[in-house]
Image (cartoon, rainbow, N blue to C red; front, side, top):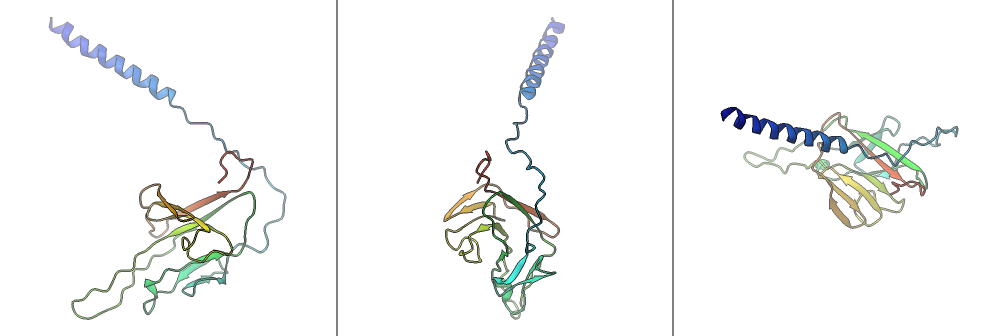
Amino acid sequence: SLAAMSAEPDAKRQKTEAETETVETKKEAPEELEKDAKATTAKPMKPEVGFDTSDCTLNAIPSLGGKVLMPLTDGGMQYLIAGARANLGIKKGRYLYEVKIVEQHNPSEGMGHNRRPPVPRNLVKLGFSTQEAPLLLGEDGQSAFFDSEGFYNAGKERESVGGRFSHSRDQSFGILLNLDASSPNKN
């Protein structure tokens, strides 16, 4: 009978939907292993975190009291990589810093009639290094960082961890270093 044939797929469909709902309810969010740190009564860090010119490449200019970094882009400088290191080191605990891109330059130089100049490649690297490491992350084995190409770099190893991220204006990025030995998520 036609009614029996049309009822059978509905019954199967209902069973499949019910099974899907059961599977979805079993997928609960994993328990967060990292609990918030207790509020501290300690005094804020001194000196205030920022950038000193002595810990910047020549084409990275700290401004606004060391809170903003700006690369030089005149006279071919846009083809050089700029790097900087914060003025405060860390030894224990958890530290997060955020970076916000406030403007993006794509300068080029006129080279004549039909010749196109090389296009400067914008690249962002965020991470941590030792005090002895070069200012450009990844030049030796004393740094760990993420780059805008979607790679995590530690020592001399490079691992793809995701797609490229946009480094366009008003985009913010954060990176956390967890040196808390009692933490289940320590780095």
